[in-house]
Length: 542
Image 1: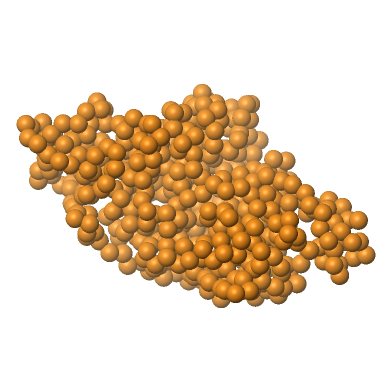
Image 2: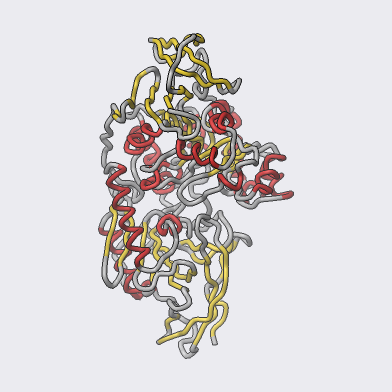
């Protein structure tokens, strides 16, 4: 089989007309020819770090869209479903991925549960990590989120790192804002990458320690413009919603990178050669012995994908995808009883007091890092009331795994004037999380999630919408276009309710992530990430 076109060489930064000889899906030789071609052939795009679950569709459904955008391989960390279902959930992802031409490689989730400060549905120890890394589809140890555990030489997390070293697999990192001596303690254990840098200064310090920087351009975190000249080694998605995936994947990131001033050859290496070499994938370049994973694009500015070839087989051509997904269902993973409005009330210790000063989580758009503030709230009939006027709303996390625990607190930055939103997608343990103007709305939104066996929901005095996610409470088996449409309608409703956040539900999903600064809430209470301890919601009552 011979493929002809203008070949982009990631080693020499050249483009020249040539013929690619392919046998059994492997490139045998490349011959330069004296002919004129219109399209440019580049290596297939590789997303070096992504959580497929965050797209709210199964791997096979994800592939239906990603393939059209030139993605031929991903390194997926299934720690979302692993926190819900353990190895059973991981196996679901692997088995569903096998039925797609897109190449799914996986990292073994290192932090399940992520921390001891929340309730999850499973636990993955070093023995399980050993078994996973023995399987050919697992190419690394997934992001080590418990950096406190690493710094303090916690035996459980260190034993998982040692297992990865035994298998010769890279160890991915997760160290937001970590600096100085603590960063050096973290890196010395062989942790090789980081995707949490948000400033050039942070990225440079980590690079000096030998870490490879993943420039993250997903649905919630946009660091491409900030880190464009930070000498990052990869461009990754991390978390990518269905409605964003419809608009593009790594092809869209490449367009942005060029617009921000990055050299196109360098940009392409960040999604081809670099991830392939780091994770030891037989891909990433158009050279003899590599898999024939090829993408035809129109030019190095638009990156319009015209044809996709995987293992020598055409998968996408003339806007037609030669593949259709057929994901299988999964039994419910929500073990929770319906909630009453009073479950979401935060009671004052002294009902006779008229007000209380409380700690408040503050949110900002396009970042998963939260701030903190305080607010003085009224007490009515022994219940501490939110202040819609000051945009201090209620936030609650409801445990989904049978323990029936619930934690209530306050959040600022959502702007909702009337109603509530809820989701069973809340990193990383995926308990139900809800924000609202009163307990009645929060109970109704939460109960809709329970009724649907997982999902997201919004309810106001005028409207209500929901999106069922019955697969582990994280994913739908529906096509991406359907999920994207439903998700977009939900976001529009929340915006009508007064919220200015670009992605209200994505932002909500990170409010329980107790390994990212600064203040978060889990089903066990309000958590100060910087101090690594729980704190009281109420500072004092007056």
